[in-house]
Length: 164
Image (cartoon, rainbow, N blue to C red; front, side):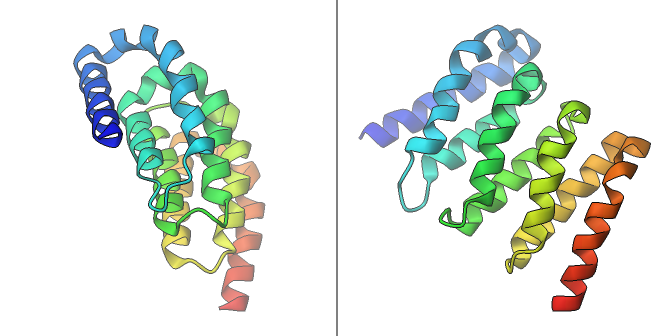
């Protein structure tokens, strides 16, 4: 019953975020710490609460731009952890992809690109595909500023081809 109430509350918060759009930003300060704390406390098998928070982050979109210094480390830690189910790790990577279409990641690029490069070297094709999609979205956003990361990604890509 508690899970059902939490799910209803999460759906309500998302609906309010969509309805208020930019005006929702003032409420993010109070909500975000509680949502991010859930990543460490969720030990359930399917990590459904974590999945709900990842979805909420995408719904909040540009409203969390000034809090990306808090969001990115938590989501990156999630998608790098080997003990997290692959489908949840994939959703974490996809969350970064969705956010980079709404939020300027220029100041945070290395904190995302380097972990994604490590994901590319892992034996999970679904994670590699999500990581490549996210890297492509970052290329589109950053344009020529992405050039500094090209050698790193090329090195990983070459290693992937060699080991496949």
